[in-house]
Image 1 (cartoon, rainbow, N blue to C red):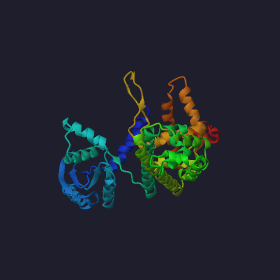
Image 2 (image 1 turned 45 degrees about the vertical axis):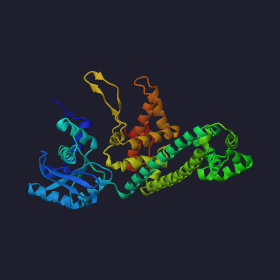
Image 3 (image 1 turned 90 degrees about the horizontal axis):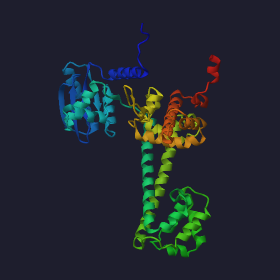
Image 4 (image 1 turned 135 degrees about the horizontal axis):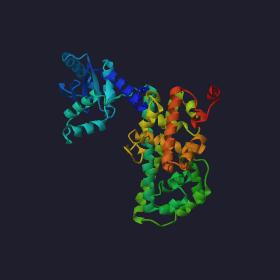
Length: 448
């Protein structure tokens, strides 16, 4: 006699997800598929067999679609449906406006992944033919078969954290781009100064020295050298606080001063390139100031959510790293399990088996790239001071069976960190190293 249903955990999770989606897309509702654009919107009302009941193409902005949703409701009721479910792709931020309009009218709202729409477009007639009208039907059709997801309904503080996280990423990209440009220009016109520090673009003394050398020099570095080493050091000391430094490195400044008289480089390019470098360094300093402000605001949001102290209990996880991760995840409570959060990051193992064939497993990379990057960066710092994470990394890279490479173990540790964050935030409990390490706690020992 068979015992139990034989359902796996994946079956149960999928069944629960489909039950939630069926509540948003009930059979008594028609589906309104919207292909969102800037000015022109394609809207279609379909039944659960994908039969088109009504269609309109209007020249309206996203925030002007309220009357159109009311029209769709009338058409659905005329066809015998009790209501409508609104569906669209998560295009920019327009979908949030549509979701707000639907919620104000008591209409359920879901989103459909653009990747699914693209695949459905090819499966429709085995071509890549694309029109807004066809996409609206495909969005509605995917919704009727529950190939959709419940849209995030973030509270104001969580929404603010996400916007600040997006700004932080943009500023980091700007700072990185400026650094690459500065190095590229110096390699052309003044390569000698790049040897003044082991890692010049990361040295605050080097950055301040280059600012002093290029500001107002118009390519005449000899005039800066003529002022003498003492004057050069004093000028760098005054510039250093703008770059977040306080201590002068005589070794770096001496090497930078000696480079002032080095003629190596393309002479004709030097005046213009040094002027451009001076402008880039101003942009660099301004971007760094804005980055510090954005990060301070993100930590302030964690304080408002009363999460700073809880997340600080995870050894090696800085407040800004935690804020960067949560800016990408939103409220972790919207994920049913910590495994779902790891999957959202796209660092869950992707199986490749068929019959007796067992292929090589890789991470799926189907989640949010920004979350993957934030978790990856946080692990680098956490491994230095978190003994549980370091022990896990050591075990994964040294075990006899199924030994992982360094980068693979790093990814596994990033997944563990995300699971810890999910537990800490959703249950509002401090991180417990004993539980994280898998060792028995006093409570479980007493129960045994």
